[in-house]
Image (cartoon, rainbow, N blue to C red; front, side):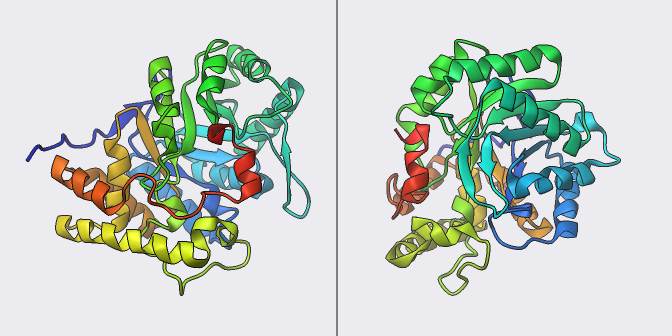
Length: 338
């Protein structure tokens, strides 16, 4: 049986990006899209993450329409700014009712978004700044050129991208070095392995993998009885609805068997698998509580053997998930899915 080396405590995002913790913390669910959250517990979770050595903190200016950035500012108050690597997504347009109205990555809009972000975060720079989606009306070269100007001005340290395909990665990297691509990657979302991940590696672009627990589906804590509450967008995701949910939960139970033999939870096996995919991949865990954070951090101590990886592949083969990761409208807007 071939043993794998333990997971290092930190990784570098691509050839030009910052050194960050091997796991990052995604803050979205603390303010938006997963239903009500406890602000005090959210801040305590960020504190716990920082104290545990987690440095990469991911947010978006449209998460809670600014509330998530304000929450992060509160969590970082009294902490050394240089100990946090703040990643911010921008560009998504919303309305007063919380609706979604496309993407705007024009240079003038980028400068406007960043000004508000810096104010809400209470900082004078963002470590990694990235458009949340590709704007179909603005060439990626123009967007990255505007971001490069902000790097020169010192307002951002690195440029990232999110949910773009291989061709867009190449075009963007020809304008300015790209630190990382943020994209969904998990045991049941492996579409990047065909073209996007090889291209990122060829170009020296790291990957921050969100959805490693498939929005809770692979956490081992989801059930049909749990369901979704008010404000939880998972109610509209194909993998969480109808027969798809039952079939996907069956995959989770197969994975649970692997975890039980290793003395690990389903979530820890899923996160450990993502960590095993390469040192250029940094998984983001969307823990909203200290208990869930502690569980995910436990994955750093799970050393998967080749035999373990074979069992995981057998339990959840590539392409085994039932249903797309988003609704049809959202899927059509993803450059990474074209």
